[in-house]
Length: 212
Image (tube, rainbow, N blue to C red; front, side, top):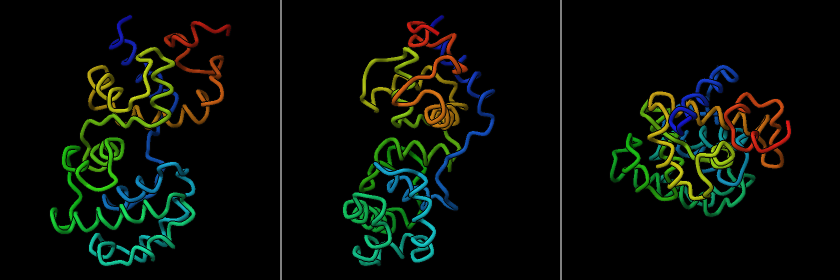
């Protein structure tokens, strides 16, 4: 089985196991997803979803964030961790959105990564979930599971994205990454791979090398 065939099979198996593939962050517009994803760095999505309602009520638009005192943003996001850095990034990205993009979140990875604090993971999530473009969101679950499957043995997220892009069906790549998050939380966890109950154990290198 080639890597492309394995990837297509993995997509099929995860579709059956997790028919509903949605982002676990709560948002109503592109700006909210952009900011929520920035807050989620080294923080759980559950915690972010507890913080963002008050944050987005206080600052509904990019201009509101751009005009805000950074200290007020800090206070509202304090429980997300690294709040000073995140508040500074949110303020700076909002100012750039208003000054360069007329307050509109860009629809390409190339433009999104120009924003302060925005890397390829966040950019892929936005273009995939908001704009419906092919995307590969390489988070910790994606890195771990695609390594265990045998697609790579590296940790560099950008390189992993480039490995996976030609292997995954473009129209299904974004949902595939969402399903990897669900699978990584439930079955293929960081602490242990529960191969005996994994829907992909017939195609996984790690499963083949373990005693089921």
